[in-house]
Image (cartoon, rainbow, N blue to C red; front, side):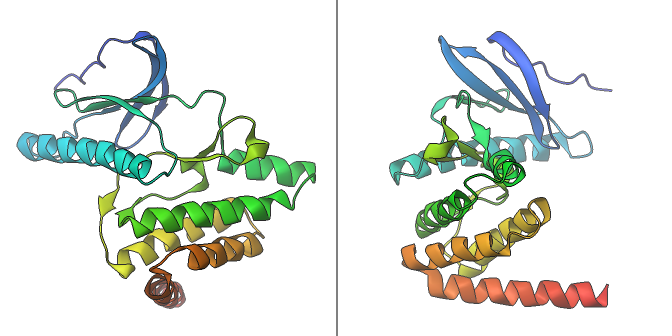
Length: 230
């Protein structure tokens, strides 16, 4: 069996997460706090196809992050992309918290719950701007959104663009929102009002929202029909 590739050397290298697509490390790159994402090979795929897919996704993630930043959407800075090891070095948003953890914390404390509506509207605004750039995230969850410290300032940072792609199709944007809705409501029960506030802001900000929301409704209907059949 082929040995798994070792990560490139980095000062203070520490594994923090392992997912289906790769591993995430923290350390210092040129003296700066850095997150390093390493895509590992899938042994069930043909080696040539595996290399091609890994390189394509690494490249697309870097391009998506740059596209966000050019559009004024907060995302980690790309420090370096290593196409030999299919590894990307990103700005580490130090002391940030995920939107997921922030919502759960506020709900548990019962304090400043009204700020969650403001946060939902902020998410809707950011996603509207992202979709108007024809950028599809591909894996929208509240775990893939960070709040810079202090979280009360609601400075939102989008992360984890490993499944992102470019598309102007309302269908793709509607599915992006549907994925977020399913993840949002399963992670944060009884928050339908929050997601509706998100969609209302999205519709107000996006220049292309009408066909997207129409497609979202169609995807929702298909999802309900599949649930009934199942």
